Image (cartoon, rainbow, N blue to C red; front, side, top):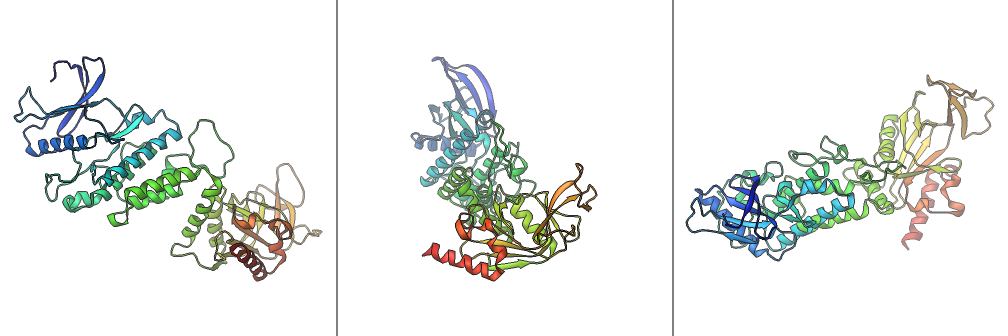
Length: 467
């Protein structure tokens, strides 16, 4: 050990080396990594490789700097291999006290560094939260002991398992020597992001699956149809693009994973658009349609069974933030945000105050999703109030047992019960929701026309828009 090192304290232990915090004669603290497995030639070769790659990357932002090193030809108890680096803070510890913006700024910087490493044909092969440090508020990859770089001499065995337990790519468990190291890095980095975002101590097995026990929305607050905001509280308006990135990046087939540049661009796109409503509303509508039609979005489709209609409307109303806007049969409109099966036979309770009896739900893509819509046609039903003159809807009251009354009482729920007509449900930022004047959907034009006539009208809008 160097004579001017004092206050030596161990801060990390690995299979082949230990890391100590030291204080030098200049009064500053540093970290020093010693090779402990000195009898293993492979361990020493990897230690030398680590120093070599860090020397090559000396001017690369986002990589730990090597300040000095010792590689003795003959290792003794008093003369061991080591290298000195700046003393950093573990990333997961650093992020505990950062804002949402600072958190993702760090992750994007790391993605940029990874893209740069891959451009230099250097792969880390050991990406995990513990191997990422923060030095002077900048994130850096550290521990390059398993790194691969041009002209590196082969050290690993043919079928040697290379990589960390919770973030290792499956191919690195099987035949690491023939694996695509860059795509393995992508897999490990995606798993690392998941651990950091969810604040879990370990990762998950296999590919990321949305709407499962490992879904990000199980661990973070996902804002859906909630107008309130708590100052200082982290909340996510949309994770659609983020989940898509994690799904692709943890695909068992390396060929299906994005490269580092694509990963960076997709991460930035998600971060830069998820909080901007008019941008995320477009791709969330497409994502919702892709869930309804997983193979391909058809020109049109219809459903007539109440349970099928219920499930589609649930998806449109409750799983995305402010996704839809709905035009009512007579006039006006509102978001559908809550869909329940009502007590009255074959009816739905919408937004806790609308009762309707669906006849059919029809989807029309219009060949342009800016104009796509769902039309909810209603069965004609008899009014509860015998003197009701409005043939579209009536105002009644619901008792706690679900039965109706025409008498208002404080304990009864006021209900609008629809007798006929149709609703049009569209993307909130749809062009259909921007049309004003005689063809404004708020005037119930869709309910006054036959279904096919309304479709022809919308097709004219599409032609005008596209020409």
